[in-house]
Image (tube, rainbow, N blue to C red):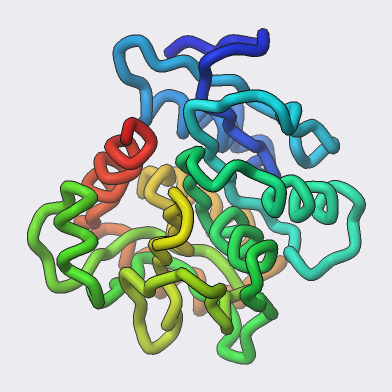
Length: 243
């Protein structure tokens, strides 16, 4: 992995949240996870502390963008969220961009969709999204599948998709689980392919009985003992950023 702090030909990782309860000491930050998992020969990253208002200069020609997850809601009025939404609206539509969880939501919100806290409550553990657009998944280099399973942790959901967004995958719980944009180079997922199952488990345990009901956490942790498609999703993301 190489992280370049100077302007240049790099993939920008917009860090919109940090792991709670000191989990970064064992697992790294969300930006670290992406930089390690998406590392490729000659690929350079620069991390922007977007949670603190840091964003790439709008005139920078980026190789790509990744927006991390966050406990924040995209509908909140924090200055950094409003700045990120404005930045996304001005982003060159030919720059590949990938959003995860909060990133998935803020992209939709910025481009004409709508996000809200779901009445369905917490989605946690391993969820499976039915693949609705297998031809698009194949275009991304994905392996043939009927569904994509991956760790999730969220309350908010994209309830209205923007113009140009195709639902790549979803479920009854999360209908708009993955979006592929036809009017720009953009791809987003509600799930967390960057989370190892160990991290996802420790994250849930850190919230057990505090933010999330104990029984719900116990049930979700059991699902994380099963295999997922996280590495297939990461491979598709990596290829998308290289396109």
